[in-house]
Image 1: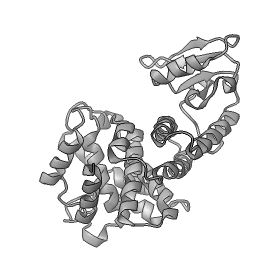
Image 2: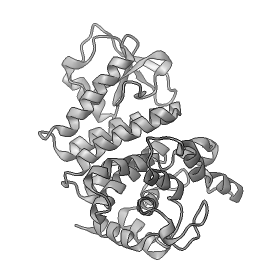
Image 3: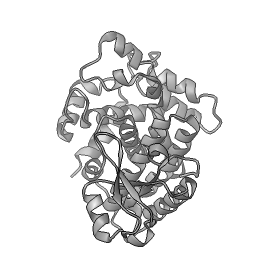
Image 4: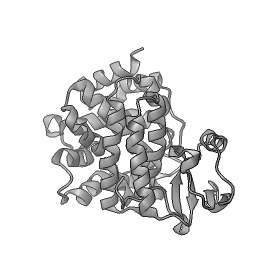
Length: 325
């Protein structure tokens, strides 16, 4: 991550420390706090004069606590530590691919959630590019099955989680389709991470509603592709293909998608790619109004009607990958 990228929300000026990446010797000897998931308040976890042990780190991992917080650490220095540790993680062949992906995903989920929460466009784009590079490094090793990938991803309805899932699956499908050379896969991943950036301009009341949206609310939510496009279209660090993922991932081949009803070859190949995995991830992820569907049930639902309007060659390729034993 770049030195300016905020890693996890800084709670009242406290710097987040990525415990999932640390060894006991690397943990700073300062007061460390944990954030209460219910209240968001910080509580003292370990005083500076009590060293962190490997058993402590194991227990934090078991309870899925990846971050502690400290007031006496320079945030820019910690950003560099995180970047160095993540770069080392994805290259560490002594760690199994599943463990590397799980740890990487846990950390970058916090990274992206923080960037989205801060809602600074420069930081979001920078985070997306760097996370894309890290993810591709692991995903291109070809050792994870579809079952492995799905089981290691998170499946809540948060925009950051969904964006990462879509990015991972876009990389897999792009490789299966030979859509781009490997050198462009990190750009594909970044496009996946950014595809729903327009939702940051939509009310959370609508995005997190515990029931299906009313027609008026649907119209508001359906503005997010255009909102995302307008947010990024003047940037020189976003490619045309990436912009089309953001703008066209809800368009359909039959012309009945949105925002403008583009059809067939009017829809960019990267956007068609995103559409397939976007629908799939929406089915296998929890939503405020329903639980996630099992893989085979999700595929059955897509076969019945939800794949209408998707690129059928891409959908068949994705289905084959998901159902492969």
